[in-house]
Amino acid sequence: MTRRYAIVGLGSRAGMYVEALAGAHRGDGELVAFCDPNPVRMRYHQERSGLAGIGCYGPDQLLELLRVRRPDSVIVTSPDATHDRYICAALDRGVDAITEKPMTTDATRLRRITESAARSAAGLTVTFNYRYSPRNSLVRQLLRDGAIGRVTSVHFEWLLDTAHGADYFRRWHRDKATSGGLLVHKSTHHFDLVNWWLADTPVTVYATGGLRFYGAENAAARGLPARPALGRDLPVDDPFRLDLAADPRLRALYLDAEAEDGYHRDADVFAPGISIEDSLSLAVTYAGGATMAYTLTAFAPWEGYRVAFNGTAGRLELDVVERFQVRPAGVVDPTGTVAENESRERLTLQQHWQPTREIPIPHGAGAHGGGDAMLLRDVFQGAGDDPLGRAAGLRDGANSVLVGIAGNVSLAERRAVTISEL
Ligand SMILES: NC(=O)c1ccc[n+]([C@@H]2O[C@H](COP(=O)([O-])OP(=O)(O)OC[C@H]3O[C@@H](n4cnc5c(N)ncnc54)[C@H](O)[C@@H]3O)[C@@H](O)[C@H]2O)c1
Image (cartoon, rainbow, N blue to C red; front, side, top):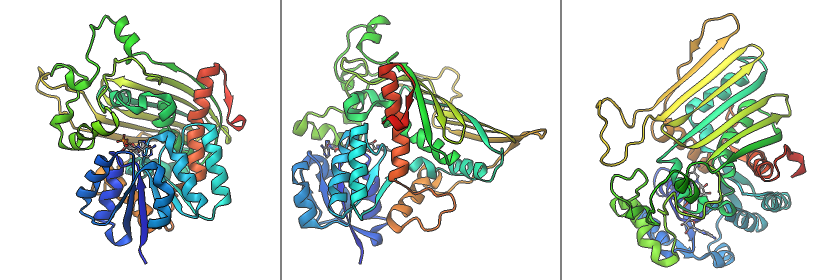
């Protein structure tokens, strides 16, 4: 018998699961219900999926959805601070929950999820897609196989550029109460990678940072003139213009749905009301004795990451450029040499007293070097015996988000935070 799936939160991310269940994974499960406050977005996904008979429910009708549509699993792709509500409702009724990262946003919500999971026979999956990217999987394999001996320290820098990074300052992510800030919303990916790469658990976190680029105060300090409240109203050559009407998907999902709930996808990144940081640095210690220096910058000119591992037998470095340059409409590259969408990745291993070796990174077909397809296979067909242990659950979801939650406490209280306090 095929499994029955419901999806809560029918925005952008839900599309990956809807398309999988309407396409490549059609034989693995049946989509039986959607739950979202916005009927226009539910209709969009219903029409795109081409699946008749999907029931549409509002958030207040969740229990009715579970009773009438009887899903075996609920996929949670709603804003971060709402995840706990749906995860717990599912687990408490013996229904499996599959949640997007971050599993949740604060210690109270995390405790609620942990208690529901402890009471329930149903399972909880956290979909950490970054683990499935071939380059990140290869790092796990090399460290697990002892390529650099025991890891003693990690140096991890993540850069979000002024296109992708700016997007977190346009909508619900800009509100710390809804997203947990970038330490929770975004860095949970990175903290999960480190926990998994090292097969270790975080112990203490010290964080510093703030809002240094986006926001009304920074704009005023840099002498920017007054701006319209929405990105759609900015001049065409403004790097932060976002023309929802010009992109059929953004138009259908957000512009055409605004009248229902007033959710503007394109608030100006310099508009008042931002309560999250755009510049963050952390020092983290791990139970096994390793330390990490981590930084996140959300307004860099290029996008990518650099992570280096020092170990007792050598050093491993991964350098990734996902986008070399942000090019606003109408801004011409005078040299004509910039390959806008070119990406680059380089994994190098240097063992003590040996030359540096570049390790080839394998690639599969599809998004993220085939990583998304592998994640969906694990979600809808079961992870089986993955030697890299990429499928993640409650423990991994908690250990990653706890670094971000501890980081937020550290920022607020200006002290190092021990995770066991939380
Ligand atoms: N793994 C990844 O790489 C990745 C990428 C993007 C998003 N995400 C995650 O997916 C989730 C959704 O992000 P998104 O970009 O699709 O956001 P989105 O704003 O596009 O979609 C969110 C949807 O949730 C709905 N919603 C709002 N309040 C709700 C409530 N109380 N109950 C139920 N639904 C509600 C909104 O109407 C909207 O349809 C987030 O948790 C985000 O962290 C993960």
